Length: 504
Image 1: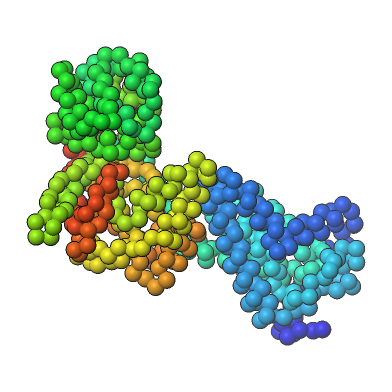
Image 2: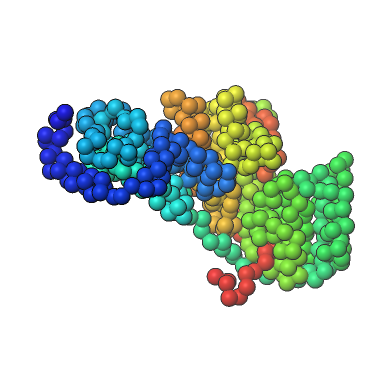
């Protein structure tokens, strides 16, 4: 049957027959079975789903590449099978065009134009390659083999394969437009300064929170081994932490304050160090060690090196003014913010993610935790710098964090002078569905529900309804209004300098 499509494109039909005649002259052999099996493996996207499952076993870029490949494949398959096959009816090759023993069985009955197998293959390989070029290079020959197999087995004309491949590449590029490549994380930069040299811990007073995330019975002994001349104060659970910090830094001969504990402990120690103009040595004593990692002292070896040599840098801090109590008689307090602050459901999300991380790994744990948190949670109404929003999360980082999405992890620069403001709002229609979809597809940073900006001062007002606030992991209830501002380069912290040959 001569289709409408062929009548209007006779030259393509002549070229197709010419190419198929050349393919038909290839001698038979094991390659016929290979291409038939390869073509069958790609039926219904099974080959690419299997490849995605293998890639997803590796966290980071391979997992994101698998996800984007599947999304691109789904788009290409839908456009091809539900769109163009209806618009462009075309008969498939007949046994007279190729040796019968090569024909795929059973022969497909849908329109030959375009090739859905080719569209899916190229879409998956291109989509994955946009995220992880090395994986894309590995997948490209497989995708090309699948595309060619459709001609070799008589399932499609060459032009069907070319058009399907173009659709697949287009689907990958279109999905990339709304799922852009994450901006590169900048190189680490420091505002270097000098601090007291502390050989063997001489002049160093260390406060150890025994409730810290990684504290063990042998922690104090390990610190005495690397800092034999330091004064070490192990704070017991029943003691007042802030009072113990004051007593520690007032120990005779103290030149620098060291701290072992979680975010809240480090924040309290930083506030005391700033107040007394002492340099701070942050030791990796928390669960995630946010500031120690950013400061370059994520291991004891790095901390000892910086302290012994007096290598230090300057960091901004955040000043948080918290208003609590009755509307007519508010109580105002001031806190130092070293890392982050959040309002809304973020604390619950973090708690669930940390519980699930050992079993699932951090990326998958983040997805599951987000689903659980937002399936049951409700947004809060806040006025952020005078603009009202219904908010799932109001997140402020002291300094620019990366990546630019719902799970900021790294802060390469500690003195950039900004507050990293991130709002995930429920102002839009179908907000909950939008949120969950953006988490699953990794598009939180580009979704309409996400608002990213930078500032030096921010004010958040609960509008009379008290809200829950977290500052460096410490929760405060009954907060009515909170103001943030940056105090530039107010903290001296120990940080090992790079080798002179690598120093920027």
